[in-house]
Amino acid sequence: MIKIGIAGCGGRMGRTLIAETLATEGAQLAGGIERAGDAVVGRDLGELAGRERLGVAASADADALFAAADVVIDFSAPAASARHARIADRLHKPMVIGTTGLDAFETRAIEEAAQRVPIVRAANFSVGVTLLLAMVERAARILDAEYDIEILEMHHRRKVDAPSGTALALGRAAAAGRGVALEDVWKKARDGQTGARPKGEIGFATLRGGDVVGDHVAMFVAEGERIEFAHRASSRQVFARGALRAALWVAGKPPGLYTMTDVLGLS
Image (tube, rainbow, N blue to C red):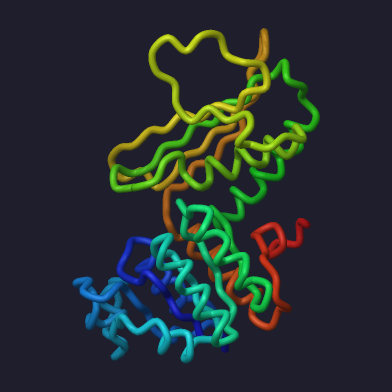
């Protein structure tokens, strides 16, 4: 049995992860944490997930969670994920990180920890999205710059970062296929008199509303035709299942920064 800790246990993904851990063969729930002062601290984890009481309460003690768990799954907040990566490094515990919106400093903290402990990091843990990323990279490698690349994403009204981490991952996959750095060619928003679209640009469009779990479309648009690669998630369970799969996979792996491509054996 692999003992799983959940960082960010009070959020929508955290609660789904609790339920999925309880339902996953080979996984055992070690505990969950939230930031100090959060209303869920002290509440029973089973109740948070809409299940029967487990007799295990949500805590704010990250060190204790890492000490108790074999692997910690982190869907918290950027600063918290960076802090948790340092704890994982100090206590020699693997992590699975699904937090998006990290800045360069937070990303570097995770990369440095991964030099000494195994960490799986992904913008999206869906098996379908992992396959989508591979297809988009291959399409970008085959289709030349006469095909404009546009990425459309939509999420629920409460999402705080934009474009989504998955949209940016799709952009990076397309840029890799073209042999360029995404930051050199991206256009995250358009407004007003923008002029003609530059050749080779990778554009993003962001929509927010309702309770949309996650829709992503990567478009390759040329004169006379449009090719679309799409993924639409209707339940957070697909992300939780992928994260649990990654957690069971990373236990016992050597230090390194892994992705879902590694977990699925697509590397």
